[in-house]
Image (tube, rainbow, N blue to C red; front, top):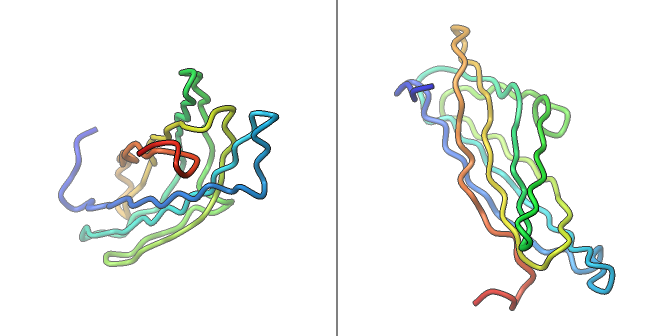
Amino acid sequence: MEQNPQHGIIIQTEVQYQAEQSDEAAERYVFSYTISITNLGTVAARLISRHWLITDAYHHVKEVRGQGVIGEQPLLQPGQCFEYSSGTLLATQVGTMRGAYLMRSEDGEEFEVAIPEFVLSVPRVLH
C-alpha cells in the first residue's frame, strides 16, 4: 500500500525497563513502552488494528495481532495525537519491536503505517 500524502501519520516510541516487575534469575525481563501516533495529514483516520513482531536476543520472534490498541480504535483528526502505554515480556535482556498499524481514513481508504523498530534493553547492557 502506497502512502497517500493525505495520510501523514507519525509514530514515536519511548521504552522503559520495569526492574521491579522483572526477575533476571528466571529470565523474565519486563518492558513498558509509550507510543505517540500523530496525524499530520489532511484527513481524519481511525486506527483499526495492530501487528507487532517482538524479537529477543535469541532471535525468537513473537507475532502479535489484534484489533485497535488498549481496547480502543481511536479516530485521529488532522493535527491530533493519540498516546498509549503498554508492555511486553522478554526472556533476554535485549530485544526489538517493530510492526504496523492498519488505519482507515474518513473516506474509507485503508492504509498501513509502519512502526519503526525500537530497542528494548535493560539499562547498562547496551552502550
